View 1 (cartoon, rainbow, N blue to C red):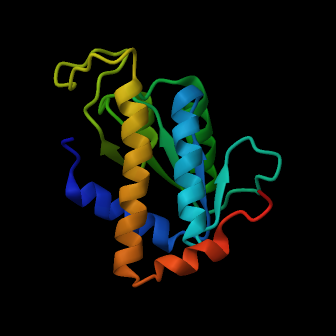
View 2 (view 1 turned 180 degrees about the horizontal axis):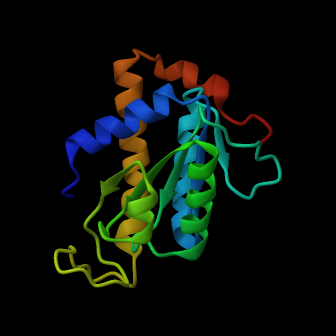
Length: 167
């Protein structure tokens, strides 16, 4: 997938320098983001899903990762506006550079997968609707986690200490 390496570096830097990381998306995108949040939590990064009952207030030391292929999904756009007005850093992961969400965000990680916007340079997929974007998010989250583990010399066995144990 053609994702800019510098954007990935900026995303990792933002995650590691944030007090807390918040995630927002809708539908299947949100399901993928929940997996990313869980994986980063295994690394000891404080993560929250927007709308969850235990979500704390976002602040200027925090980052909001808003994912939307089109960048026009109502909930991520409005939450991003609110987070930005509070002073949080907003990062978009999506396909549409010209979207409302891209204009709100401090920066965007562009994933040129197919969207409902049908942008000219989108990577086509035989999968239904935006499955490729949702799958990308899941794998991209694991790639980011692996980079963090490698850079910070985290002992993989120690990650089990942050894994849920009420299973």
